[in-house]
Amino acid sequence: MTTDFVIGFGRQAIELCLMMALPMLAVGLAVGVVVSIVQAATQIQETTLSFIPKIISMFVALLLALPWIMERVVSFTREVLINLPNYIH
Figure 1: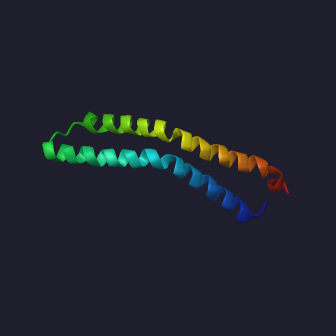
Figure 2: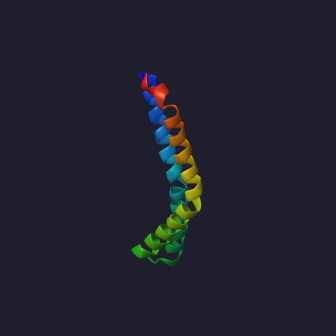
Figure 3: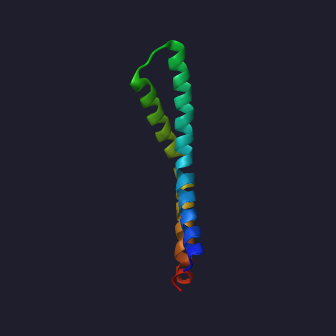
């Protein structure tokens, strides 16, 4: 194993982690902006008003994105296991 291989493998793993987190983070950001605009317009500064909608929307996004996430993880794992003999020497 060369250092280029290890760096490339680590890069692929980090990219996979970021891609898995992206749907939930994007939905959380969008809902947070909308709730912040509503709070600014109504001058209601309640903490739970911003927390609860974000948690619920991120959970729904996770449920909707779960098949895609699992496909990506299984594909990455399959590629690693298939190429495992090539990684050893």
